[in-house]
Image: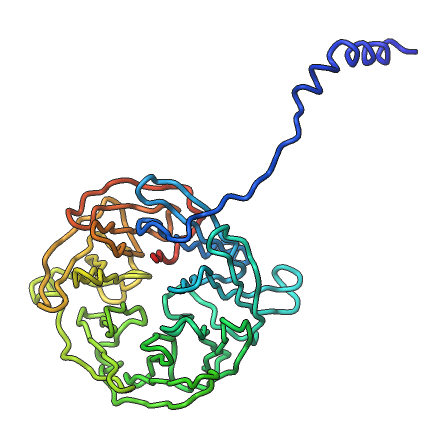
Length: 379
């Protein structure tokens, strides 16, 4: 026996018990979240811009600055769908059989809300619209029965899925109209290229019961609205590039348009204040407040990050607060409780900034949240 072999035997004899004691088998477990989420728990959606087949969503406790969990949401991820009365989460995604190439499959993945595990999926037509994330790529009807996914191939249409039955229901042709905004138990709006709205009503099976096209409510050649409105109660507030809010109500299945009102004074326009960002609006439902992300810049800077958030009383149509941000932001959101938080993120920095929405005080920054934050979502 060579010296090296003798040494090995001696080491095993002398230290064998120690080695066994050091290498203990790890135990595994699955943590569970409570059925009722804290209102300061927020979803931070990472579209993973530099490797888009690996989208993710992070559940963050904004009070403690902790990540509570993560969803692997799949390819070219845009947003989560968060039902009101069902302990589940839904996300539309695109997968390829060879990762970045091969046969394409579009699916809606169904996650358990308590342990964030994938518990099912619904395969849908492989034509969902893929682009930078907005709130309007998909939605749930207000009764949580149908999930709607916007398609563009470049033909425009909407995929309808009965999410409760886990089945694809059908496809609705919507030529000239894009994006999806829920407006009732069985209804949704779409923005059309001529400045009008299309309102679609579904029957109990998810088929089209009615489809109505309104007159134009803005001039797309003079001052178009962005495709990133915010919902406030039974109305949507669409804001134009020049900073005019256009309220839209649905009454008896048809849209009614309120008078536009300005978020900017003439003096502020002369100072080049503008709206902008990927998610530039938020609303606090109980307080009746609109939050708008703004910056100073020239024409065509609507994608630039904001430096301030301006707050408006929606009923009075007046600004009531200016919040100077500690860091640049492209997305904003506000929690819906009695002590609301203002949440912001800049797509170029993987971090969430947390502010007291009442005072504007910057409370903390939560870092290491993926790579490219697109949207912030609250329950």
